[in-house]
Image (cartoon, rainbow, N blue to C red; front, side):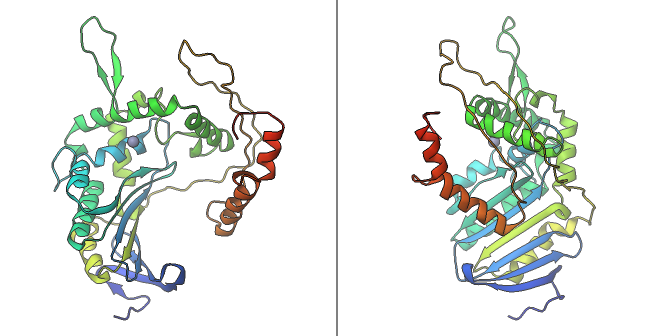
Length: 333
Ligand SMILES: [Zn+2]
């Protein structure tokens, strides 16, 4: 079927159409008329279909609210009321990929399957999870996935518990992950990149149930969503279903997710990480030298940075790597 730029298909206006040779695909960019949701569809012969919905989720603190929401929306929704639809999915599905990821500034829910019925089912589970989660009626989801107090015996000390809380305690005891977090904090001290989207275990317990729900209702809205489809699916059928079952119930809203550019800074910081009591602190130091280069949205800059990284450091003959090893400074680069 031929599509026409500017025409509305099942509630979506076609903004752009082009051939993407590298992916053997026809790419069509749509905007949902009623909500402003953006949808890109890569049509091709591949039966390994992909669906992703993502939201811009810039954190305003280090309570890990984007990460806790990611876990929580997958803990039951209007149509899928089991405790862990996500786990049930992995068991019974023919999926070739299924995950959810919280980035410093966005949260995405990708899924792929070669089986048509399975694919449609997975897409429905994800859409229902992000738009109709049970977090509003079940406060215990927040406590279970975020944080809560736990005491087993009246004489025991009260402890913090929670899926994300525990996960981040693990992450924060790994020097590499702590280091990468501190790097972005020191490079972008005036932007939201100074916060931990995953959650700083010392700050997670500051998150209230109210702010948790507020974050979901602000950012998990079609106007702030990006939908991606790939494969040999029927474009009109998929558009129709997404509009009719989900997007149609919302109205367009202005959601400010702008991230301002950081003006250059020079920073030198020393941070500490925990080791166990019987460990020696010898040879446990890490050093990192960092630069901000170009912008993440510049494709050419990004490619160049990757290339430079490989040529200078990642390759065994990389001159920077070689010089550092020859100087005998560290055990590993
Ligand atoms: Zn997690």
